[in-house]
Length: 412
View 1 (tube, rainbow, N blue to C red):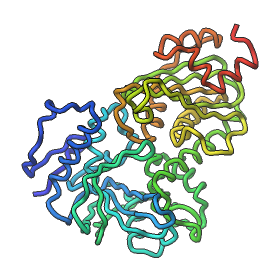
View 2: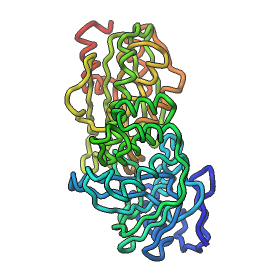
View 3: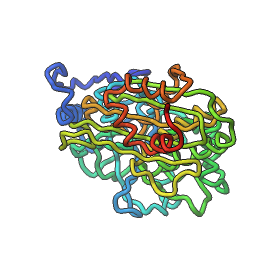
């Protein structure tokens, strides 16, 4: 009997009598233990090379070897409503073990393709049909071997489970999302315009990213597979620039605002103050976190832009564009222009990367909170010192935008 997903959550109901190690006896704060536990769990559901299950829907396009890359679906060996597994917009509030447990169930089937062959291959057509599906879709895969033990974690894309070369893929009946289907069949529509159109109609950012990765957007002759990592940043970058066009013509914010929240042992703080558009993301990584495993010092990274934007890719990576999208959405909603600085303090409880969605969705969540408003920057700066562990002086020394503010006018 097929295992089933319990609809509406991450809990998995297994009817195959899987032997499990009681989770209470494991140190789930150790990333190596966590990875091993979920590798064992998903592989115990896979008895042979044939896998059948309900894709959220989700696809993955690799980047190594570009322009010859591995493409394929992400399919759990379970049936039912798996939609939430593919929608990071619904994951705020989940713990890292919950996220890893859910996403490690997704088995990646891999077939090597030239990125230009997106419209000339059977796999390309099926992945595009999967990407525009309105709900979870049944997929059968025959793998060349049982999946390997690796569970993929990346600070850009969402984690997923074991992978193996794919010999065959069969897609069950799907019902297309009408808006995505329209953009997909409009082969004279520029990719940028397609992203904006879908976004303006309420499509989740993650779904637009998958459609771009599957080669389902853009002018016909220019369509190609886009590595998932690149498609995520491309959509965040494109949509935030679109949002900022009217923002840069709006009147300035009338007060100083500070938003804050805590999630996944990350402290998030957003400072907004009157002035022309400028933006910065400053991240502080404590020892024993993803980007600071071997040092005993706190590492601080930042990227910034002023009114005319950036020309080079942000030093801090895809997180920069994910946070900028959230900021641009807020400013567009209130119809004001402002300077914005996002501070992220990453503590050791953030034991492994779970993807750029973490930044986008948690900055969005932070901005849904009621801000604390101030008349002066001095008051706001003093308040920030009470919300973050790292002293405010350290943040200011590592912030291009705040140093620029200091050089323009005195905080006193």
